[in-house]
Length: 245
Image (cartoon, rainbow, N blue to C red; front, side, top):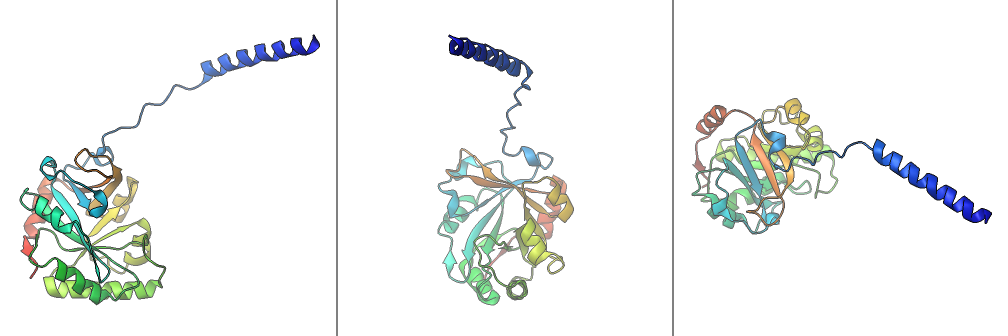
């Protein structure tokens, strides 16, 4: 009998405690903004970067972009299998095209530059060539060696095209390999933190690496040009379309 009374006593106070907790529980937060562009809503010049990792793309439906950056090569042998499809899909859509090479830390820089240039021959672009510099998917190599190889890459590209390559990187890559070594190059920064681009004064900002777009089967990377539309037009005027020969 005593056990039954104790049980109902505990059950009663348990229910009272539950209802009190429900009343005191803070209101449920609003769902996060589902607009994939919201973090960079202050910028009107928008773009994507694409590689074979993005899967199938409905090119004709992507009609509100200002620029698209395409992966072409990696290291001194790899070629992105969807580069040609992406290029053909966008070349007549009136968007500014750029192309990038994923830089391997364990491979000669000049050989990587030669591989990059040989695989984009005959293609026309609207911004300087781009090099992707990041620790992810790279082996751990001495910083001095990476910088030497990267400088060899840059020198070869500049010699052949007359332009300094744009550098794509993230916060760690900037600190480890770019800062004070390649400050004269245009920076394209990957960061989902709104404060970082202002600190590093990047020109292009990759602010969303997990965007769900109906026109692309896999998650996409979203980018903006960190200036006004007038400044974007000035930028394009400064960098006339050019073809790799």
